Amino acid sequence: MIEGDTMGVNNFTCSDDGLDLTKKFEGCELTAYQDQVGVWTIGYGHTGSGVVSGLTVTQDQANALLVSDIAAAVSYVNQVVTVPLKQYQFDALVDFAFNLGRAALGSSTLLRLVNTGDFAGAAAQFPLWDHAGGQVVPGLLRRRQAEQVMFEGPSSGGNNSNA
Image 1 (tube, helix red, strand yellow):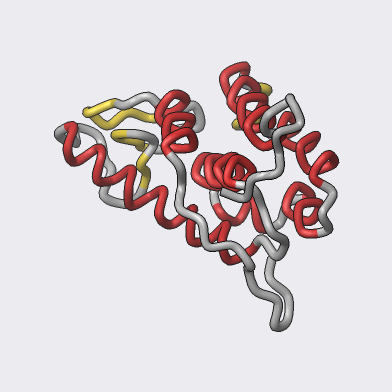
Image 2: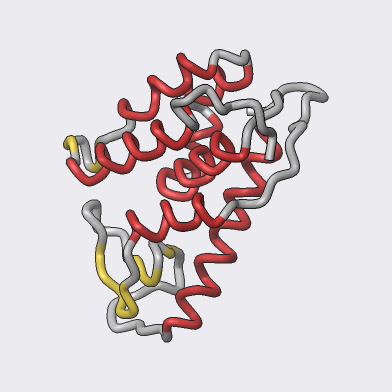
């Protein structure tokens, strides 16, 4: 969480790669369903008081909900990260915040390590977030591993771009 007068130093938007990661793991359901812990969900992982049994949306509506939901995660990550990031690091954190919620990122060791510049330590935190309803969920582990790979960036040492 932001403490005192500390504020984010990044002003990113989610890249196509980041959006593709979210779409891949969320999938798109045009009819409301209950997720693994019983939360009503529609589109690309959209939740909220308006999502109820029997609700349907069009593909255009699902896309619009995703854009809105991602924008909230983007704004939050830009706000709470106090060190410069690379685009791929930002995208991984946005997917994490989108999937687990902003509060989970805000109170996490992952964010604390990012904000101390310990990117290797932060990357190692992603796979630890693989539970739902107190159970390990293989799909969540795969997602966290994909976020971790994205966060670590190009393995060839090409991490010198900020965009």
